[in-house]
Image (cartoon, rainbow, N blue to C red; front, side, top):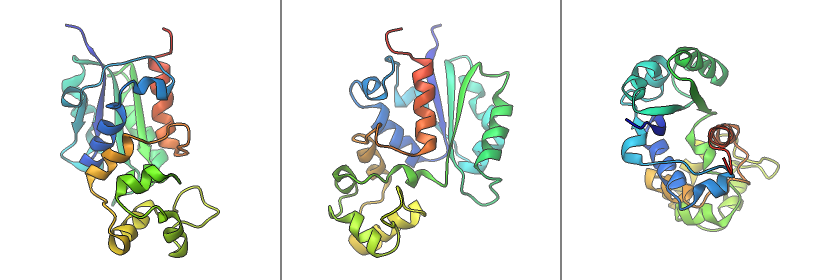
Length: 207
C-alpha cells in the first residue's frame, strides 16, 4: 500500500478549517515555495476529541492508527490552555513522544493560540472576518493592537473585540476564508513559519 504524504493531528476544528483553507488552495506549493504534495482533508486531517491537553498528553496514541497510512506527521495545538507548561515544554514533550514512531514529524505550537494566525494588516482580513476595512484603526484605538506591534498582544481578545463591537465573524468558517487568501510571505508568526519550513524540507522544489 502506498502511504500518503502527511497527516495533520490538530487540537480543534478552527485549526482544521485553517488547514482546509490554506492547503486546499490551487497550487499552494507555489506559495510555499516547495514541491507539490497530496492533501485531502477527509484523509489527512484528524481533529483530536480531547482538545489541546489531550494532544499534549496522547499525541503518540492519537497518531498510532496513521503510522501505516502516512509517511509524515504534523501535530498542531495552542500553547495557551489551562495547565499548559508553555510552548517550549509542549514542543519538547511531544517531540520526545514521537521520536522512534515517526521518522519525519513536526510539532507546531501556536503561541498563544490559533487567533495569532489571523492578524495581518491587509484587506483580506477584513473580507474574511466580514468587518470594516478600518479594523486596524479600530483595534489600535481600543488598545488591542498598538501601532508599534506586528500583531495584537492578545490575538483572541482582539478578535473578540471585533465580534462584540464591530460584528466581525469570528467563526471557524472565517478561519477558512482567511486561510484561503493568507499571505505566506507576510506572515510573521513563528509557528506558521515553522510549519512552512518543514513542508519545504519534506517536499523540496524541483525534486
